[in-house]
Length: 85
Image 1 (cartoon, helix red, strand yellow):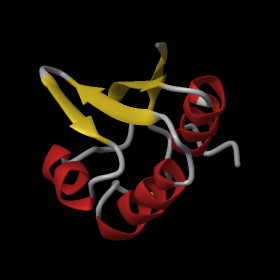
Image 2 (cartoon, rainbow, N blue to C red):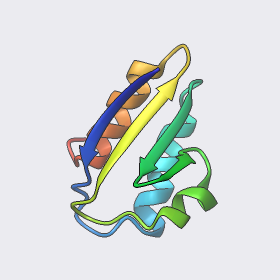
Image 3 (cartoon, helix red, strand yellow):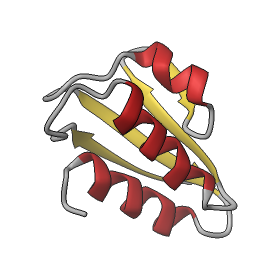
């Protein structure tokens, strides 16, 4: 399992559009991908689960993945949340 803690740096609150993009990006990977915020750990490929997190700018979360492409998945989602690509 690979994980990385990041602070959300998306220009707008992570509501419908940014969360949908995050779910699409997570779904491209074969690994199981999770986002953890406080005590909630959600499947990053689930749009309903991700919407329930209510992620906000500046919030610190952990991105984790387990599987054949876990490192790439964590790096890609972390870069997206940090607004790097």
